[in-house]
Image (cartoon, rainbow, N blue to C red; front, side, top):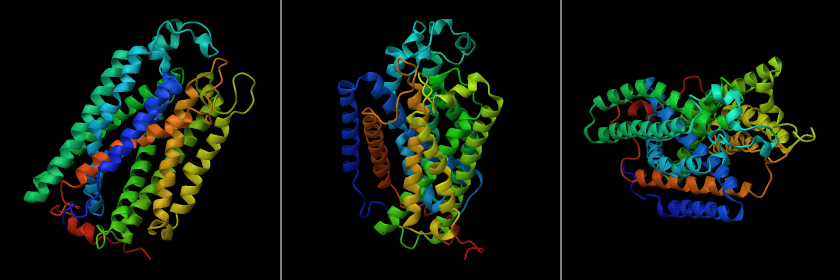
Amino acid sequence: MSSSSNAPKSGLALGVGLAGIALTALGLIVSGSATVAVSWLVGMVFWTGIALGVLFLVMIHYIFDAGWSTVLRRQYEHVLAAFPYLGLLFIPLVVVAWTQPDVIWRWMNASYDLAQVGGHGKIAEDILLTKKSAFLNRNFFTFLTTFSFLAWWFLASRFRRNSFTQDTDGDVKWTTSSRRWSAFGLPLTAVTLTGCIILWVKSMEYHWFSTMYGVWFFAGCMRAALSLGVILMVWLWRRGDFKGILNDNHLHSIGQLMLAFTIFWAYVTFSQYFLIWNANVPEETFWYNIREINNSDGEPNQWKYVGMFLLFGHFLFPFLLLIQYPIKVSKTWIPLVSWFIAFVFFIDLCYNIMPAVKLSNGDPLPFLRSGLLWNVTSIIGIGGIVIWAYLRSFVTTKLIPIRDPRIGESLTHHEASAP
């Protein structure tokens, strides 16, 4: 059972990825470095978030000694091959941090005049930034970003090595090794994920306080990674690779996880909003205010309606669909739900990143604008490279981990209580 039989070609994905990157680079001429840098950040956080969700799912599989997910785990292991390329693709943002820091992260430029975005005074005079300077400084930004990508790549390489080697010798020591690396990797990935999302995104509005930001991002990563798993499973089933391997109960199980993280995302997001609204502390409420009304005239802005879309798109619609058993096991419906969840994750990142860029009157950068095109090209460009990395890995080993101790249990996975 080799993946090389009728293997999908990776050249097209690479071509699409390079074309997307080239178009995004063209935006530097058309729209300027500031617009393109923000768009590239959206694309990088989107695909890095998916890869991190995949890494978490592989580690959770091992730490709980799961059986049902074994046939899916191999496809996730192929996705993990993208980490080195994601690290390389993040380099332009590190260059921006050192050469044009106020393009995205104003706090990196001590002489930046806040009057340019409707404020007053210099960044260096901001007492809140001074108090946070041990964390919010360019050297630590560069160190944590570099360390995190290396750590994620290292963990990914351990799981890939152990799983692929086990196909050859069948030694259970590789499963034991992966379980140990998972016990070490879960807290490490949780800490680095939290630190990076705070530095990459939350620090764009460094006055804001949130103790749940890392958890919010984790929820989005998991939902997007689970959606990717469904898309890959159904794609392989339609190709014929997963015929006789994928059954309804695999889809039902992953659908249950998708439903669980849908509720988890709603819990985290609503709780944060409610607590900030109830406390009514200016250092916290401003984050939501600029995503509802303009600073200049107090009129509702585009982000208010984006926020309403997230309320229904991130929670209500997926919840009402995924709560139904027939939807979860339908090879027509569950991929559509998965594509929708991934799309809403992208919109959620736009909602978190783009309004942090202020116009001269202090209003947030609008959602519907010509520069939105570069968000799309960034997603396509980086996504093409991720898919290329997946397809290159796909042909190097077996379709499923044929000598994993749990493979028999996974192939015959069933739910006794399922209708």
